[in-house]
Picture 1 (cartoon, helix red, strand yellow):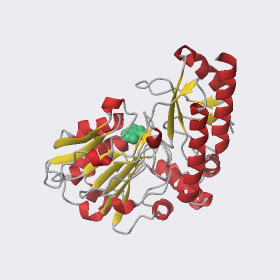
Picture 2 (tube, helix red, strand yellow; picture 1 turned 120 degrees about the horizontal axis):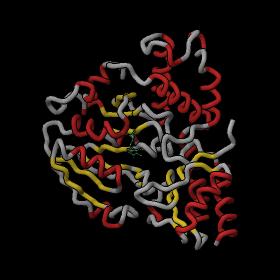
Picture 3 (cartoon, rainbow, N blue to C red; picture 1 turned 60 degrees about the vertical axis):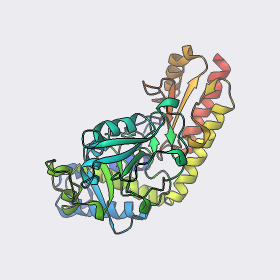
Length: 359
Ligand SMILES: *Cc1c(COP(=O)(O)O)cnc(C)c1O
């Protein structure tokens, strides 16, 4: 198995123990005498995968019984539509916080269904900071408030949960399971799996029951959370392989000691990497220190002419996918749960060596 460390933003690295386990049982799943990819989602073997994965996720996040957990498709992008379709409930205005490109995509889609009140906007600081909550312009008549708790591209992450009276909707695609969160503060939480959960194709939705069943008229049945909730996420054929793999990741997280332990490791990893950046004049991160992401660390080289060389040499050193998003430039290291401390240490060592040679 490769020793390379993969810093891809998504689809991203999976824990090597999980990959090994999937490899071991891929051709023949336990007693099924067929691959997990070849068996019915309604059969006993897959139903057990579905049941256990949901229970493990509930355990990890302490999800209360009055929340449904859905295993859907369409990515976080489908949720940009499903959130307004399900949460507007007869109202025609919603609050959106704009902290980055994913926020903007959510806003653009919600605008097809209602008036969007942008209650805070970080575009004026290039998504490097979040306005103080006290200054937000929240519309109290709005059906809900939506925000992206970690903006994957700019590396801008909330360190708190906004306290609002209306249901809170959060895109947690790149932060879910990286730290402990209080699910009871949310109306709906959603996440595409390919960042911190498992392979792409699966989208997790955690939604409070009382918000179900009041969808905007004339919308696809598949986009009604209650359709999925009433059919155990099997109204249509689910993405069985991704669901199974996500279940393996949940088991692995529990084996690590749960989110409390994972959070500490993630904090350490981020601290190591930001310190290396801050302690050098050769590297730079522009995000306001309080809101720096634990998961996605963008950084720039003081001399942008060295970008190509940095990417070539890092790849040679088995440090993969460090190129920054095209809208930001520079570099980005995504250090999700699956990235071990050793991977971050290897990156920091490489960065120091590179600086010595080429500064
Ligand atoms: C990757 C990402 C998305 C898009 O996810 P898809 O599954 O491709 O639709 C949305 N929001 C955030 C925060 C992301 O990181």
